[in-house]
Each structure stands twice: as C-alpha cells, then as structure tokens.
Amino acid sequence: MLTADPTAVLSGLELKARVHALMRDLDEAGAHVYVPRRDADYAVTVGLRMLTLRRLVMEDDGLYTPAPADLPVLRYYANAIEHLLPAPTGDASFG
Image (cartoon, rainbow, N blue to C red; front, side):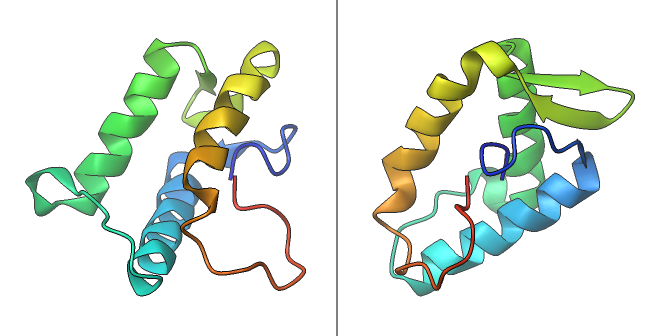
C-alpha cells in the first residue's frame, strides 16, 4: 500500500479500505489475522498511529505518505507477510 508507490498520498479512508482488502486476502489464503477487539477499523487506526508515532509514515491534514528515509523499514514489514498472500497476478506489490 504505502511502499508500492512511495509518492502516493492516501487518505485515512483509502488506507483503511486497502488494509481491509489485504486482511480479507490474507484470511482467504488461510493466514491468521489478529484483529484486536475484533474491530478491524480499530486495528487499522492503531496501526497507522503507531507508524506515524515512529515517523515511518507522515500525516498532513489526514493524508498519509511514507517517510522516504524509512522506506526500507516499511518494505521490511511488508515483506514479512508477503509469503502469506496468494501469488500475484501481474498487479503491483501490495505494500
């Protein structure tokens, strides 16, 4: 999501929709997806907050972009679950 196009600017709603789709893909692929409080919106909100607090993601007026200097860290996290996803069909990376 954030690493596929590091120049993209995404709203919180766009990010949530993409993460929800990713969570569905992971679940359909048989991966265990932990959802705290059984609330996917809460999970995404907290995850995004942690990324912004760690300054891996920058937020400006509700719009999010990856911190350019920390793209390797974001890619590391994305790669940590990539093996759980179905094989790509020629589409861009999910990260």
